[in-house]
Length: 510
Image (cartoon, rainbow, N blue to C red):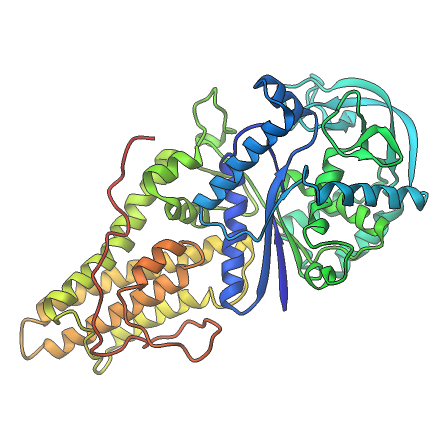
């Protein structure tokens, strides 16, 4: 069984931002979850380095285009490395691997008679680098995605791919596979997009207007439209069309933001059908992060959250946790530096980190740093054990982005119950008396074992922190190599390691 997870490849006309970090961390969480369930997984991400906006950004910085692309791509890679993302492929559309494959695909479509050249006049949004219908614009003639830009009229000759011939096949594919798009909200939205006849897709730009791109192999006066070029990376990452790529492609799941649903749900399937390739296994769609009050993040409003600044102060796992804990797949979610700090202190430091520190410190003090034996269990013990096990079991199967927040919240609820259990049972008092010491041993054992299971469950979300938290806990191996949540894996009498500070006090001001 194989899984091929992809993020979009990100436009490099600016430095990486919170949205880029979020989508890529979600992909990494899914990959880590797959890995411990025994599913071989390939994760690709990367940078989209062609198009008009990238050329303009390079010019604005006074840099040669390739030097600019190298600089920006390195920034994206550095952020993903800081976030502990285990990507297997970092795609760049300017690479010597990608470019000839794009030319090969364009040439193949041309040879099959699927491309035609015509003059087109329409509204063009420089922000989207797309032609727009009047219905895509607001009353002032501005693009709805880029309301600060007027979509000016352009008349030019370009190459087009007819996608209407593939519309019914795409609809039939979606209808036959209810799980093709998740969540359901976006499945319904895509079906609405496919309900009416589709206009031809313009797949070229004149090189005189957009020089930064892949040249058409049969007409060097044109470059390949940046989105057409970028989507092809999902195939070229696998070595398409060389033998062996289809085993991975059969498990392809594209993790995307809702703003590029049409690109991935209409244009990409049409391109694949035109090439004679099967459609991906699934589209996993998420909504966006917005600033406080539901306002779109903007430097002018001062509500931008810089992922690198958050990592500098709170660490990568804190940001990963906030993404997992507070994301929503089917609706936009507000985020701010204040929210991240609040989450760090209230949930990570005060609940999770404090529980870990006080349990290990107490065990060292009261039981010579050894795991005490577990005696007879009371109904209170069984209740907390059942709560922790049920929460961990949410991570015992493959996840989709929409599953992550509820599963993460369930584990946090279990942590809160563990904290209440430890406070109410007070093992430090029980351990002082010979008459109650065995009960104190049982409570401590139950709490430590629950703590172990909590951090095992959270490992895909906070890998570095979970590893530090689990290191002092002497665990027996589970019954199989595939991770399954299981109680009673602590070794009685085994020595505990020293507790470390999992969530230090916040550092400098962001």
